[in-house]
Length: 229
Image (cartoon, rainbow, N blue to C red):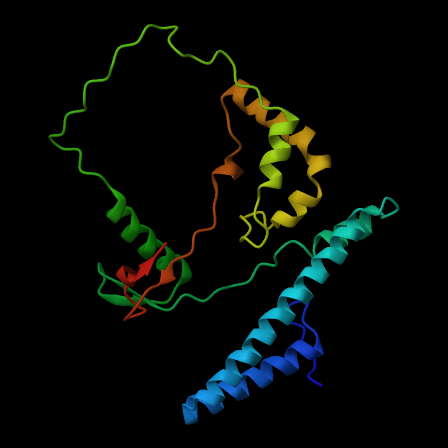
């Protein structure tokens, strides 16, 4: 049986690891022979691996969810369980990028981020020189205006329940599963927070942050133009 390593996903088990190795062998065999039978066998093993991973992942998060619902759970055990939902901070290595200003390949992470930022900012700017704004319609002061926007706990409940499980988390690292499992505890607090933001016309700075990753498209990895966000 295959051993589970520390860097493996928490829902991995020896059966999944063994199936993954079997899938790799089936792929190499099909790639070498290019036989219809071997390719069919590879697809069969691949589908088994996908099914096993989905079931193991669902069982893992289901177990954590049930544990969180336990009223006798201590605060220490609660935070320990929550860490199973929160994504750990992995470091992704971006290949060296070509800087058109210095005409050199940059290795530093900050410089690579600046190169990507400058490239995408340059592609999203709008040339407004010599452009006139269209004439806007004139409406009376009381025409279809909202005197007050009020968020209810029901609105928050519905929004949280619509969150898709499996989507990447934001900078806080909190998985959507945590929000959905804790909806009854969070709705009142978030409702008060949203209404306070609307009444004070302010928004927490943390809400303006997002994790943005450049995805490689084709050809040379070092060119920012070969990436999209």
